[in-house]
Image 1 (cartoon, rainbow, N blue to C red):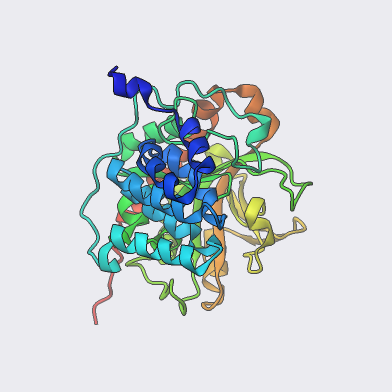
Image 2 (cartoon, rainbow, N blue to C red):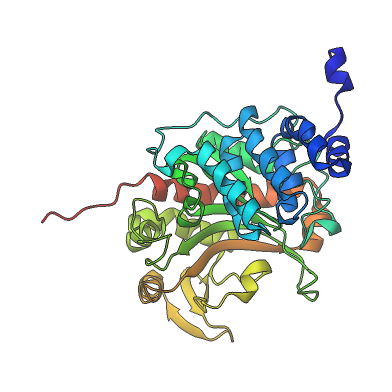
Length: 374
């Protein structure tokens, strides 16, 4: 190790110095923080909501692009735009996005560089801790490169299926999206993160606003349906995965791997009602599960409202075009089980679910929609 490397402050030390510095002196810490990549992004993203530190945080996030984190920087800046407390900081965010994705109109890349994980990433993860649930501050499990993180343990087997998978921690939420980088950031358009479906990891639990929420771990596949009339529309297969998923559900042959995964892992589909999803206005209002080999849809009271995949497709097709809906396919575990199992929880419980769903997800994003001849 060189003398310079050994004298460099740790991320925590650099963050402390930056917070204590005045505005003129703070900028000298930008690159020294940004060099820590995903960990730096996780650390400073909450600062964007601070009127004093917000502008500096934006500059740190943008600077991580110089250290190979361009996609993560774009995704994070897009997610924090709504919480910027002043017009000036919002302008900083928009200007940074414009520099990272010039004109916001570049064509989708054919392929990104293969996601590379440090050799030691994930192998020191001790398992979930009680303090991981319902919060972000003080947690490490969402990081991609940290030896003490969960994400690398899940991402490695997914990279064996497709080298373009990448992870994206969600701003101020104990959640991670894992998705094909080109699909998730198509053409450098940060709003694509809403249009694209994604594999997800959640550690939801009690919050200040919802102190009675039950802590749990969830792993699954998250698909959103837009309104078709705002900045995120129209809902068509070029950018949106919603119509592509419906195509798969209609096709008995293509959905067979999903049916097998539902049965093998005891997956649920429909309304995921935990964490930030607990307060949505528009809900699909059913949960489906495989019961003795048949998909059964049940309402909020547990009553059966439909049987079979045709019934599911019919319900989804009937959702109003002008309303936004969230749809999950997932498995959840009590926090106590996850904590008790420690690190083996990742390989024994999460990875089998994620790899089986990843195969279906890859079919959806790579499948070219059929176009009927005129």
